[in-house]
Length: 87
Image (cartoon, helix red, strand yellow):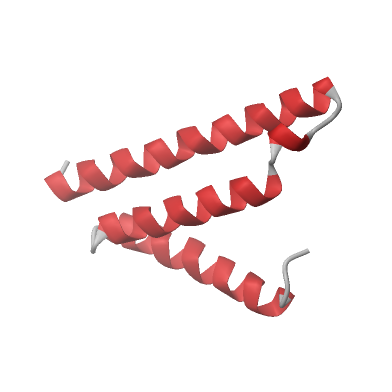
């Protein structure tokens, strides 16, 4: 539901592809991981607002997905640190 849809999709593809390539190639991995982490945080806040769910099961599902994405952000941070150290 984000507008303009075409720009949103293009930015999503650019961040996900570009950030992943930066990490894989080891060129400015911190920048790639940071871009992916920021994108994931924003998308998670928009798509999984568990605090607004009225149904307890929906709230449980949304919170689990939210926390899963928070873990993914932590993994991106670890990947950037290890890549910068040359591991």
